[in-house]
Length: 233
Ligand code: ADP
Ligand code: MG
Picture 1 (cartoon, rainbow, N blue to C red):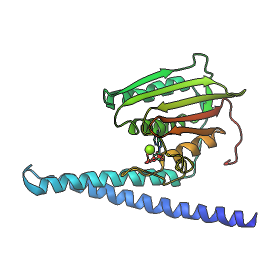
Picture 2: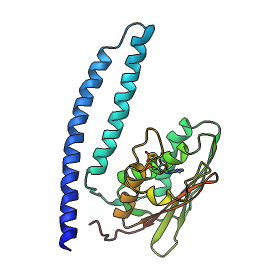
Picture 3: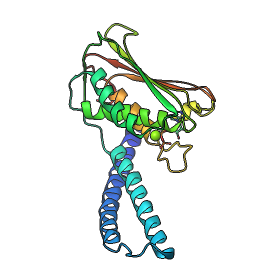
Picture 4: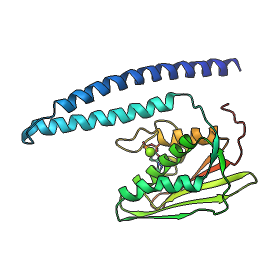
């Protein structure tokens, strides 16, 4: 128990340092970005323009990474309210419809009798969005995104399933997907699924993964309808 306490204190202080550093970096990035925008070259000829564009892209990517890290290093505080997940999912799908290629089709199957869940709307939508983004990113050559909700599988719980027919996850990687910083993407932070599973667990729920290389992936959230205590509280 003593070792566990030391370990958790250590993690808390690492978290504080990480959050302080990322906070500072974000401020500097903001300044760099502002000045880079002012120094926009007037001519689109030659290497200067290209260098400037590259710089802006790099700064924006770095800002996104640092923002994700800052978000992940913060302790999760949930503000519970009744939430209609069917409506949430429908509104999360809207921007996705606009940005995906014609090669991706979207299908949804929402349980009409889905009860409202007691949840943090902002956080749970963030978790769902992280999963939806991965699904789309896994289907570079097209495919089908299926989103469904259901009552169950046990009394007092509901299920959300986000399924894609993308590249799938290698069986040796399945265990790692929910861990922070695991990524197979060139510009990934590896924090999307770690954050999603932390959010779901803080709600007293669980995340299940099913995947097969070349066939697709299914991410399942099982969430309690009413608020319950969990080990992170
Ligand atoms: P990131 O998207 O930044 O890589 P995530 O935590 O969101 O980080 O995902 C971690 C890794 O899990 C991804 O890099 C990918 O290898 C794998 N993964 C997650 N979702 C899917 C999916 N739907 N299909 C295939 N691989 C996935
Ligand atoms: Mg991701």
